[in-house]
Image (cartoon, rainbow, N blue to C red; front, side, top):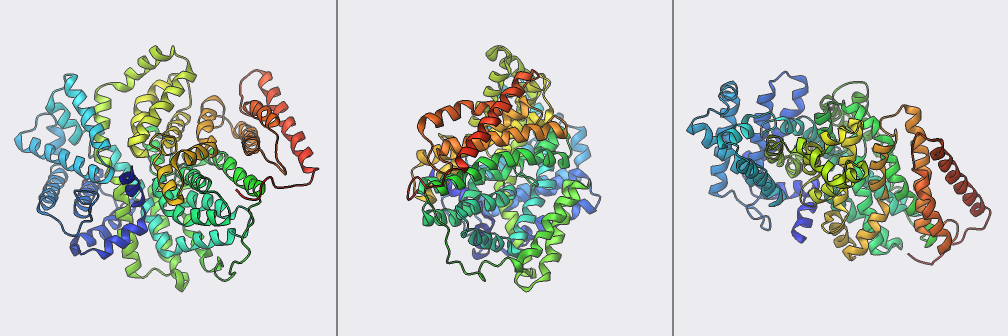
Length: 627
């Protein structure tokens, strides 16, 4: 597990860049890492055939991974050994042949000669090896298992090899297209913002919030939400922001396990927070055909519901344990005036998407906006060197996600050719008797299991392909299904036994894993409950008025849950009252066509109002001197 935590911590673009520019590697690969994103930033404005873009993308992924990631992840790479040179040469030949002979290869699919089959096998080996160096053995083994099942099921090897090489879902297929047109550009935008002063802006914001009760914990939520939606890894997000926020939380009085849990909960939300929502959101667009603009708009209210109990619990426990804000903060050191112009690029990115442009175009607009706006002030000005560092940093950080693209294509070919999506409906019907709650629980368990060993993009893609069609038979809105799957896959980062993000946070906080995981699961209650609202309420499928109605009562429910689980609101709450309060909590979330459900909601809201009024009329007092 320590190796997994080390891998997660390496996801920081900052760390990757520092290592990258300090090692004695060949200049040509440094230049490739800089040029890699430049080519794809220009693709929204230049008409280039898709197969050419994807062929170049796969070559970049293979070449950079082989050049900079060692055969043994525990060792630091200081030179490029001969076997990596051989694979880089093979990768170059394969991608050139793919681009130059695309139409011929497509026409002959399944009828290839010895030369083509040797190329495909070489491409298969290179893809597995680059994924292994980045993610470990789990992802390659899943790919080998899925294709091995096809052989067992009677598919001919030439049929399988043709599909993984030239098929729509193969290594050069739709998944690679999503990664190079969407995910890469958003990560480049994030690293350029970081180089322009985005990290310093967040740091000053955190320092300023130290003057607010529970400030470091609230700052952790804000910083992790902003950074996590771009990073695409909750564990990596914990490693980056947690190294700053967890010590601050401990300093003001939070116990180590609570500080670690707050950082985990905050980082987990980054990948469900618009406008970027990590890499999986772009796969939702590819799978459903729903415009990215609609995906992020429909995700706003759920994201607020997720963070609401986290913020509320932080504030209540700061009161409960009398955690006082720091007063000795240098006003000059926390001034945000020098960085306010950096708000323009994210606004430009979001605005371009909301007015109807594609996510690819919006990301390119955001990147160009950073390059221009950063020149407004000296302390944020991006010099050519900083731009090169930002581009290289984005490329290297992207490898931690992008290396999965070809292997995910193998898995998709195996799943689709085997007919698993169509069979899943029969399996689910047999195991659950067709009861939707049991089917949802089955999907949750599958998301938890897949998420233990796969990145979010992999676990979501597999589960959406397998379970999505079966759940659509229940008449559920397609976006609701895919958002539910994405949210459930996220829970593996926190839920034991693997819970990688929790392990990383525990290591930083110096706490034990189980108390940290238990506290984190209490905080991320929204990650378990909100997906059910997607399915059973109009939170996604309804009109705007219906969605706001569901949101309002759910928000009250999460506030009530936070008060009762904290056992504090302007004073301690006795155990009988706490138990009774938790019993009525589900009433805020119930939904149905019968009027009785509305009456139950109203009763719960009235209880909430009366309780709050009684507590507001009494003097506030902390329960304990320290957390």
